[in-house]
Length: 607
Ligand code: AMP
Image (cartoon, rainbow, N blue to C red; front, top):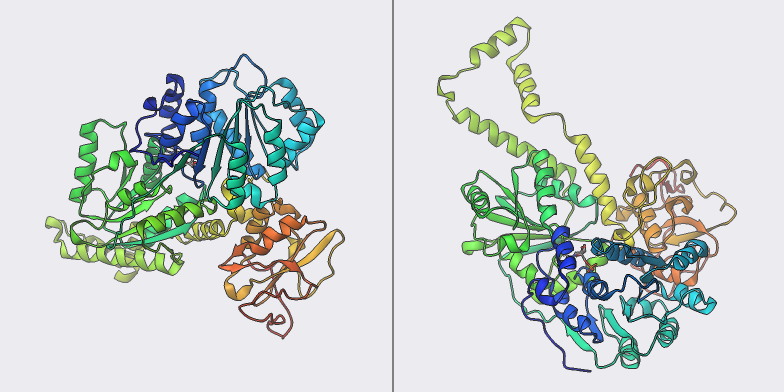
């Protein structure tokens, strides 16, 4: 293998040798500059070289391999020219969607995801119609090759995405088999978050003189910046921001998002929720950007939502908080971002939102900054209310201190009170309600529910296809509904296991603050099981019984055994199986509830 290359500062997409049509799409998508993995990987892939890339999810690796494939695809040839192997069907779908998005200017381009668990028919008709790129899980791709329904003779590029995960899931034989079927002339790009021996073996067997890419980050300390992360993804991020803005005492905040379009969208949403926010991005004319920064400096604006490029060099002492709405694609960007706070010897706070799949990237950043990034304590409703009250007190006292410039409303208030037989306190209370707006508790309650649920979703949450439910809710996006107690989950005491179900035990319970929705979310994601198939849940003090369909594949039960919910490993096992040998933080206790033996059932517990 050739020497490891460390990319220089990311250049523009045009400099990477991509055709102008693709560069135009990226501008439209809102990417400002290539991420480091893209800057390092695209040129060798464009030259036709093999690539061995160490890259976590979240670094932009999908575009790193998809763009060179799209740059060279022959749209006149209706045969698969690139094959991407992914460990899971969710990732297959997500990668296929990314190809489609980047191919917006390639008329007639077709990509097909093929994965286990879906009927063969739609995949067969897709393949027959002719596709340019196939993205699939190794098992199903091998099946199609054996049946002769997928041909690799026109393949020029094979991508192994998340190779370590693929091998962990036991797909080594499939990967070998598939690579042997591909033409000898093919280019191979292998991406993996880690490089265990099994991945090295695949690379040594199937890659030829690959450009080996590792993004070496300079380690740097950011001693004055306290760093926290919040496990939250997708639609719930907006609720999470709202909660942070409500509960965190901050002076000024800079919120980072990955795309220019998102800066505007987010700033507008924050304004609509009553926050003093504005976007800062490269599409804005220079004088408008300067005005925005000046407003932040003089305190007439508290929040700016910016992209990395727009915020470069920003030096505003007031910035007490940096919020990474999207985790940056690399640790260098992270260090630049958090450097916007903690200026002039002040201390600063950095918060990063991390989707479950991006946890690997978080660890990389943690290593690079040599600082722990601790999990954020969810601001409670009490925190939110207490902050609101404190703000209100300040506002009232400010108004009291202000003499009103000759405008004295006291006679009017006295006459309102006298005419209506009210006390001055009654009138003041009514005015307070008017000033503070409608009681926000319902809104905050909703935010609390969705944010808490989101943080408990399993690693596949981000990629999960949104399945429409009959009630119009989408299962992927609305864990609260997915988790809502249903009559069949309700129940008291020990009930018979319904036919076709198996009762399992997991080592997390009421005293770990488990709510049924969290378990449903985690299991639905980790086991890739639609939440409607999850049966009754009985939460006991320190463990829970959950009914799941019979015939769970051993690989799935292994995944579920290792999954974490509420900071506890589930260690899932059949409820009647003996306790595993692994040390348990606490020996299982029989259910305890008022009356002695009744578990706390999911039914009546509201999430
Ligand atoms: P991936 O690591 O491929 O899963 O990408 C993670 C996220 O980064 C996706 O949401 C992409 O849309 C986004 N992304 C990829 N490349 C860039 C880029 N150059 N600039 C901004 N966002 C990007």
